[in-house]
Image (cartoon, rainbow, N blue to C red; front, side, top):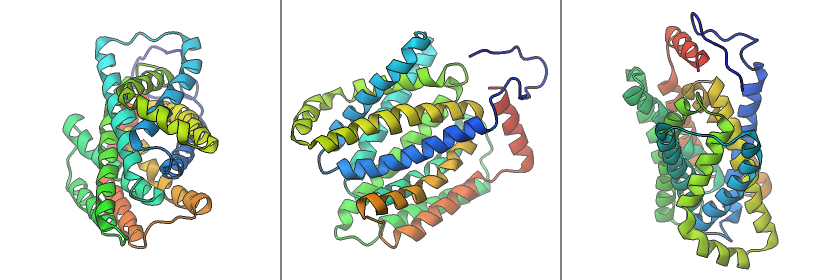
Amino acid sequence: MTSTPTTGPPVATPIDGPPAWLPLAAVGTTLLLWASAFVAIRHLGEDFSAGPLSLGRLLVGAVALAAFALPRGLPRPSARQWRSIVVIGVLWYGVYMVALNEGEQRVDAGTAAMLIQVSPVLIAVLAAIFLSERFTLQLVVGLVLAFSGVALIALSSSPDGDRDLLGVGLCVLAAAVYAVSLIVQKPLVATMSALHVTWLACTVGAVACLPFAGSLVSELGRAPASSAWWLVYLGIFPTAIAFTTYGYALQHMSASSLGVTTYLVPPITVVMSLVLLDEVPPALAYPGGLLALVGVWVARRTSRKSRRAELSRTSSG
């Protein structure tokens, strides 16, 4: 990548920036592949437990990413950048995946996708705390609405309510570490290649999950070949490709705007889950998911002036 000296106001131009459609295409690719991941994780729950599934996915992803990242040169992050990469790797690629995999042992793919969507509200809260954004009444109302939706989902009818409650909690935990990781990654991809950041963080996540290596070998030995190929799919497409396209989009969009695009993941996941798994969320989960999304929308509403200021900051990244 090339950079141009900045003189004057940080305004993006067609010459300096990528084509307008490219970040949008990156976001679209990410959303489609992440939606498919919820379905694949649910399908693989019969053959792999949460930790081994996370390790297998991350190992495949790290190898696939290395094949593309290394020819572009070996990155040399500073000590501060390494700290951010380790945080992202342990949280987003380690804790997030283990929590989500375990959560999807207990709730269906569509419900899990709905629960992850509280993350934009959490991102807004973290931005208000750590990035000096305004902590408004709208944010508080949105937070209350979003978690009211989570509570409604948790109360969804099911043969085993306790298992659902634990599954809901694990998915909310995954949403929380996703929100923290996005805040940490935003300044990182402003100074490093999104591909290199993704590769290094994925590798850190794989190292963090190495305690599950023995179980992974055992479960691979018992799993059918089709499940092993689904594991490879998870590592290459929703991990290596989707996290890279997401990192690229994050370079050219604000964290808040990008977080809101994930609204589209639940409906895509529900359709995929119905077609591929013949599975849909409980009836009460739909109003709960809608209430959570309304809460996210309320929390993320900003004035026109604030949006212009945010776009100006994004252009300088």
